[in-house]
Amino acid sequence: MSSYSPVMDRLALLELVDRQRFGVEYQPIIDTSNGAVIGYEALARFFNHRGELITPLSVFQSLHDSPLMLAQVELQLKRLQIRFRPKGSTLFLNIDPHAFAVFGPAESTNVMAKMLTENENLVVELIENTDLNDAHISNEVAELMHQKGVAIALDDVGAPGTMVSLTILSNVDFIKFDRHWISGDSCQSKSMKQLFKSLIGYAQLSGKQTILEGVESAEDLAYAVKIGVDYVQGFFYKELFIQEYCGN
Image (tube, rainbow, N blue to C red; front, top):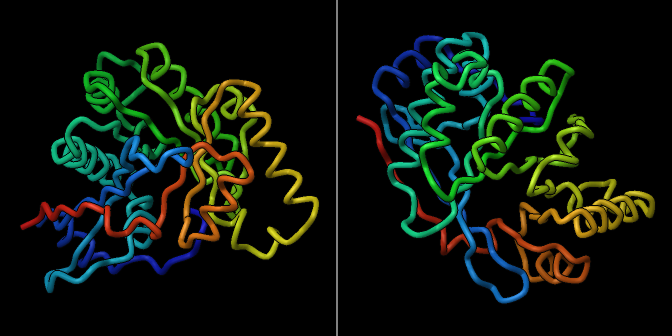
C-alpha cells in the first residue's frame, strides 16, 4: 500500500461494508521455467451500488481509520477468498498486520490465525513494513505461521515509499518483488540493477523462492527469466485471471 489514493466518503464506506460489496480476483503465479501455474494470489475487489469497481487502496486507507472495521472486513475477505479459491492450487493471501493484531496475539483466540492455519496449501503474504511497529507485528505473524507450517511471502519488496525488515526478509519462504524493479525510474540505475541481482542471488543461496510482480509484456518475462526469477505474475497473463463477485 505504498501509493496514495483518496479516502472514501464515510457513508459510502459504511454502505459498502453493510452490503458486503466485495469481490475477489485470483491472479496466477507462473513458473518461469515451464509456464505452469503454481498458484494464485487472491486480491480484494470492491464495488459501488452501480457495480462499478472502487480502487482497493482507497477502501483500505479509509478502513485504517477504524481498526475494528478493518479487522472485520479483512476477516470477511479472507473467508471469501478461501471459499472461492481455485481448486487444487496453492493460494497466496495478503494479510494486513494491523488487522491481524486486532484479534490478539494468542492463536487460541485469534480467529484469523485459526482460519489460516486450518487451511492447507496457503502462503501468507505480509505487506512490506512502513514503520517499526509494522515490522514487529509482521514478525509475530511470521513466527506463528511458521510454527504451524504455513509458508510466508514478503510482498512489494522495492515498492516506492516502503521499507524492508531484514529479520522478516531472512525468515520468509518467498520474496515478491514489486514491478518498480523493471518499470520505475530507478530500474535504469546501474546500482539498482546490481541490487536486484544481489537480492535474487541471496534468495537462491538461502533457499528462498522469488516472484516478480507486474509482468505486462514478453519483454518483462524475458528479463525475469534472464535475471533468474523463479515465478512471475501480472497482466501479461490476464486471460488466466479468475473473478468472483460476492456482494449483495
